[in-house]
Length: 116
Image: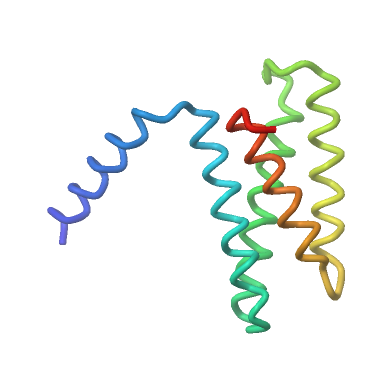
């Protein structure tokens, strides 16, 4: 088991070395999109998990944008925080708009990948 884990870690490190940090960040948002899409099946456990993961993602993003050491321009950081707060509010609704959540994550992923 340990050998398999070590091989997986080496493979991940090797593949990550070929992608920019921005592309790696975009991949996190794309994974959240996949989870949100899969949660549309109506299975409550799958939905709760996808929403919780997306919430953790956006909580992290908001925290990073509020960090005074963050080198991004202040107006951009404020805009990202504003988007993050809208996402968080939507996820707290009784019936979140999955199209909205997916769309925001797709837009962020595209922007990080230089496609937006």
